[in-house]
Each structure stands twice: as structure tokens, then as C-alpha cells.
Image (cartoon, rainbow, N blue to C red; front, side, top):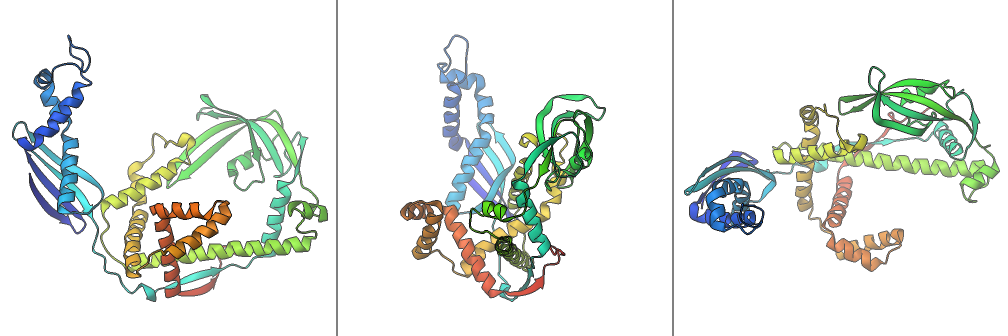
Length: 426
């Protein structure tokens, strides 16, 4: 077997392999045997036709049909023998088979770029500091009251505190119902901030028994998907909020608090903890972003594709039946998300270099400490958690990543700034 390796770019290689007829023969024999089990020839039971007859009748087709699998096998063998260390999925770019003589093919594969770490400990990031306002606390109290509200049936919507039950029939742009696209008894709470704004606007002032048309638009990464619906109002319920008194506070706190002041103080602490967590998440993301910016190197295309394809899988989940529309712009999606994927791939590569640079490993003591904490939360014996964590590469990698981030946060400069993006007024 002849092997040639050509450098295409800093992170891309092309492997050319030439296999002789003698080297191909055992692979073809295996392919013949597999086809023998499936092929039906008149006069013989399925799978019982003589091998010589199968070779004579279908040998050329079988051999050509098995070439890609054979190329893959030769590629894996070469990778192991020459310790090539490819990353990502290889691509078969050329294939030429001269029957009875040789099989010549080319496979392109990516390799890790050479990364020289720069002084990442000199970077500066900002930590947004959020001040919890009275308005935020009151909004949370309102949400709690709504969660404990009772419903009173009425004939008309007079404000947003109404639940409207509708039959939603999808229609085309001309108003013709689309078969199989009807949802019955859909409950829409107009005050719910997550509710599509078009539903809210259409059903404000709605009356029981009437039908209303709504035009909905869903946007995903620059792609707009339009849906037309007819909403037939079957029932309207007024949301009656409970009084904000001691009885209410005792109920929602399971007896922990009895006065409104106590509960508000506790709620404020929880909101402050939430925003502190958000702030720390922002800092961690900023550290990653700045380290990525600091390093300039070529990213293998296979890694870029892998991150974009994973993002595409996540996008699918937000569509009905987890299927993308027939007119989805795949090329546009890949182009719009290419920079994001490059940044993610760069961080994945940099993260591995940083783990080595900082000599980060997870000790048995650290693993047992984490397992003990998690065991209490999950109410599982510590020994079982320790055993699982030690056998889980994903968990070990996660712990190493957390330890790395802890080291980075202690190394970089963090400057506190007011959180203007989430600022609320009283």
C-alpha cells in the first residue's frame, strides 16, 4: 500500500492511498460474502447462490459498491500506523478504481493547529452590578399572586388578566383551513409575558363565540416563518388575584413568613442572588471572549461545521414537530453562524491548551468532595456517585473546566460597573 500525505493548509492534510489488487482481495471477498446472504438468483434459495456465480454476475457492481467502506478502513489503518492524530470527520475527495489492478483514493482530514498561548492573565473584564429595585420586587409579588389566582367565567375580555380558551385552526393566506392543523381548547393567558404579542393584541376585547384571525411570525437566526390562524373563542375567564395579606404570605411561604415585610426582605435576597449569579456568568463569558480575541490561529473547517450542525439541531427543537420548514435557508444559516462557530471552536482548542498550561487535574480528594455535595442533593449514596464520576469522561472534563475557570478568574482583572442593561426604575 502506497501512502502520500500532502499539507493543504496549516490545519488541513490530504492523504493519498494506492492499494494493489492483492491488498483489495480480502476486502472484496468479505463484500461478496455479505451480498451472498442477500442476493436472490433464480433456481437458488435466498443466500444459497454459489459465490462464483455471484462474482461473475455482480462482481463489478459489488466491488464498486464497497469502495467507500474499504477506503474508510484503509484510512483508519493508516491513521493508526502513522500516528496522524486527525480531528473532526474526514472527507473522501477523490476515488479511482482500476479493476484488477489498483484502487487510488484521496481523503482530506483536519489536524490541530499549533497554538502558542499569549499572556492571557493581563486581560481586563467588566462585572455588571445590578441593584434590585422595589419595582422588581412588586413584579415578583404580582407573579406570585397570579399563580394563586382563581378564575371567574365572563363573556368579554376587559384587561390582560384574562384566560381565553380558543380553538386554533391554521389557515392559508386566503383563509382556507389547512387539514390536520387544528388545536382545540388552547388556553391563552393574556398577561403572560411569554405569550406571543400578536395573540395578546388580537384577543384584547374578545367576546365568547366570536372568531378572530391572527398572523403569527416566528424568527430564527434571520429566517421568518409566517403562520395564519383563526381563533374561535370558546370561554373567557377573569383572573381574580388574592389579597396581599398575612394569610397569603403564610400560604406561599409554607408558614416560614407571616408578614409582608419579612417576605419582601427574603424575596429581595433571592433576587440579589439571582443577579449575582447572572453577573458571574457574564464575567465568565467575558473571560472566554477576551482570551479567544487574544489568539489568532486557523480553525479546522470540520470543527466549525460540527458546531454549526449542533446549533442547527438546537434550532430544530423550537419548530413544530422538530422539523425545519421546507424553505429553510441552510446556506444562509451556515454563513450567519460561521463567526459564532469559529469562536466556539477556538475556545474548545484553547481550553485544552490552558488545561495543560495550568497543569489542571482533578484529584481524588476533589472528586470525592464534589461527589459528597452532589450525593446530598440527589439523596444517593456517596460511593455510587464517586464511582460514576470516576468512570465518566464527561464529568471529569466538566470538573476540570470549572477548575480552570476558577484559576482564570483569579488571574484576570475584574472591574465592577453598573448594570445599565437590566436597570429598572421605581
